[in-house]
Length: 209
Image (cartoon, rainbow, N blue to C red; front, side, top):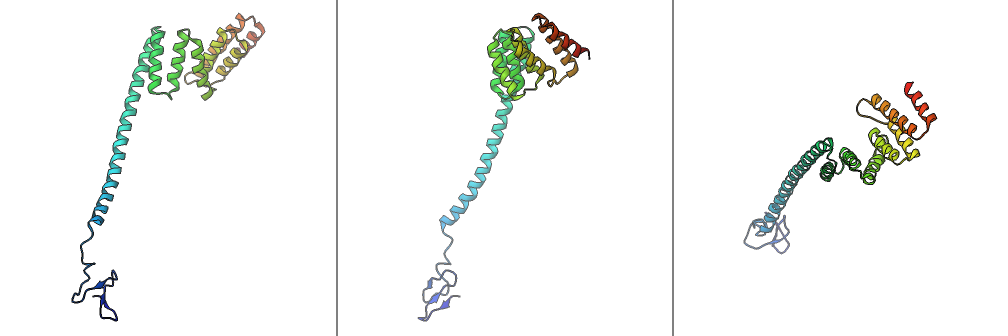
């Protein structure tokens, strides 16, 4: 019930509006909730639900896209391995280039592309890819060995020695001791071809030890 003012009018305690004489209930408070209030609440709830649905759909679509990209990269990489093994260097480098396009962060794909470029006698391009890998992993044994071979092919003694030694003391995933011995023997052969007999003897002594 409303309170009574000094003039005898009733004031609604909820909204503060005057209650017309002869009525006991406030006509303003008795009105149904404004349509725009209901619509606003419905719209807000619908918007929140819609945002969650869109996030879910986007997440699923992104996962499917990345899965497809990964599958295509693996297919092209496998084809490149087959072509490289069969001495089809030109086809292999295109395969690895495509695989790298689908998975640009893969160090393995970039390494294989560099090796295919070497096989295709495109050493400048190969060196560029190898140096990119070397900057990310300067202790990678395989990358250092490939750079050492490129330097040796150009009779670049300082770079060849540096990369050969990096490979000898670098990281190898499989059978590291055997790989390091092989690299040191390859270094000895390079030194002997360069006429650096004393250095080659030093490497052989280290190998024997």
